[in-house]
Amino acid sequence: MDNTRIFADLHLHSSASDGLLTPSELVGAVHRFGLGAMSLTDHDTTAGLAEARRSAELHGLVMIPGIELSTVMGKMEAHFLGYNFDVSNDDLQRELLLFRSARKKRLSSMIDKLAHMSIVISRERVHELAGSGALGRPHLARALVEAGYAGDVSDAFDNYLGRGRPAYVERYKLTPVRAVELIRKAGGLAVMAHPGLANMDDYIAVLVKAGLQGLEVFHPGHTPEQAEQYLDTAGRYNLVVTGGSDWHGDAGAYGPESDRWGLNRKRFDALAEILGQRRYIV
Ligand code: AMP
Ligand code: ZN
Ligand code: FE
Ligand code: FE
Image (cartoon, protein in one colour):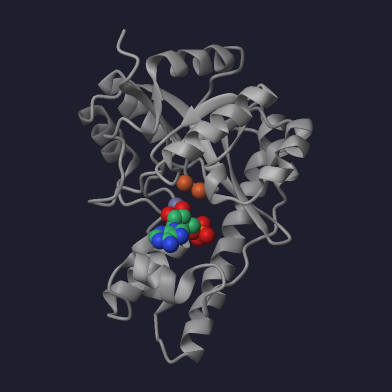
């Protein structure tokens, strides 16, 4: 068995949230990169999972149902991934609906802030760009690029939409503990996403007590040194190690083709064994 190659990409976004590819297109791309397993982890929605599962079956890929939730606590911010939860869980779906409606209000306030800076973006166009996907800042960023106010999406975040930038509006205040609980109550595995991009290292011990089970160690936002550091943290707290590219389908961005993020076969098997003890429903 080749244990250096990446076998599974467990952090991916589709057009059901703010990714550019439909779930089927995304599964096709992951398959072309030669991977054997993946998870679709859209923000605040499970709408892409059924299509992703059908497409994965056609390609012979293992598909793990996933989701990504963003949380804030004071000045700290962290994202959480849920895997293999019961998609039909009422409490979870009710909360997700709330988060998506908060996303609409938040984007609308950001458009208002831009208007006060004489940057006119039409709500209709942002909604068009999002299609049926859960609205996110990337949709607004794409509208800013299209209207000529930013050179590219990253430029739009740096100048307007990033945290602390002039058009930024705080998100719905889901706490980290509540996110972990929501995932666990729906029967899922609760994992902290890209801890190196969050600022909650000192809080991991508390989250473990609240039910946190895993740490996303292998992510393009982590330096090799950070990956080592979080591997160590995972070992210390007996957390399962996960990884993924966080690809949104953008050409040129870090995707699932690398050998640095995602899980090799051995690590995926360890995770699959833990997930195997849970329900597996899409
Ligand atoms: P939202 O969920 O609306 O807060 O948007 C979060 C998404 O914006 C993330 O999943 C990233 O895809 C994207 N994002 C955040 N920061 C940046 C950045 N600096 N440049 C490009 N995309 C970003
Ligand atoms: Zn995203
Ligand atoms: Fe994230
Ligand atoms: Fe993500």
